[in-house]
Amino acid sequence: MEINGQTVSGAARYDEMGLSPELMQAIGKKGYVQATAIQAGAIPYFMDWKDVIAKAPTGTGKTFAFGIPMVEHCDPAGSQVTGLVLAPTRELAIQIRDELRDLGVRVVCLYGGQPIDKQITQLKKHPQIVVATPGRLMDHMKRRTVRLDQVETVVLDEADRMLDMGFVQDVTRILDTMPNRKNLGMFSATISREVLDISWVYQREPVEITVQADQENRPDIAQFRLDVERNEKADTMARLLDMGGYERVIAFCNTKNMTDRLAGLLEMRGVSCQAIHGDVAQALREKTLQKFRDGKLRVLV
Image 1 (cartoon, rainbow, N blue to C red):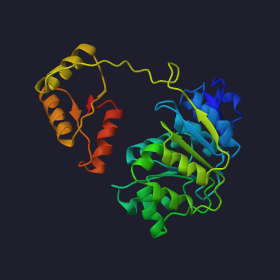
Image 2: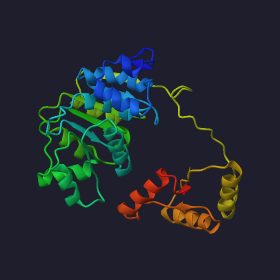
Image 3: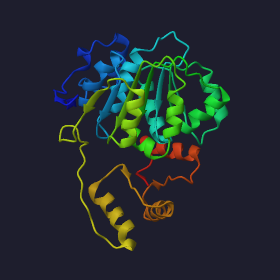
Image 4: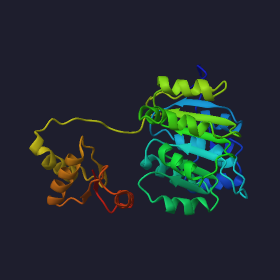
């Protein structure tokens, strides 16, 4: 791991970070003892209210890298939103919300595709942290159903992807509305020109953290490739499931029609399977994802 261009050790235990007993208890319930490289690098700077720009591969524990200090900075008795996390997609936003809730903080998730009235009701319960997609957060800001004037920490997760998706103006407008912001963290798999532009305008002497995709930090994934004819894919996948004994599998396809077709073909072969894509209602997508998490669905396409 590199911090401001200097190579440093990424080894650290949570009990060496001076965290509160309440937060240590929440981390302990997750079964975590050793911090990942990105967590060991970022947490101390976030605790000191430093701006951070971090480049790290997916699956390296970025949510806890900003989530742990964000929760530590929350007043348990407070009724104002003091932390904001922006994410490019609703699925990532939901994932971040769930991980932060495990740390014992009041979190609301705002994203498109869910009735806004339901979100307004949740906002009235005085969350400490808001996780949102930029577009839906702008909707709430226009309706004056969310207040960000007391936000101290802002995080852009998957910042490169979010800015590539055209959210640059929304992100800058949101950042401009928070007079009490103390620090800004940006996490990306790559550092694009747009990310650097946001950093130049909104960060002050940011700490730059880089975690290389080496054997220690890379997700433990074995990769291989099979070349098969188009009409043989479903049969090949079904045989792999039987031979490998895989309990849960995610299959990615290029188009919505392909996801539906593959799911249907696998169902015909007796495989418990469902597809999700942009044309599937959000409520059904969340229900399908929960079934997959609970092990009630073998294949998610």
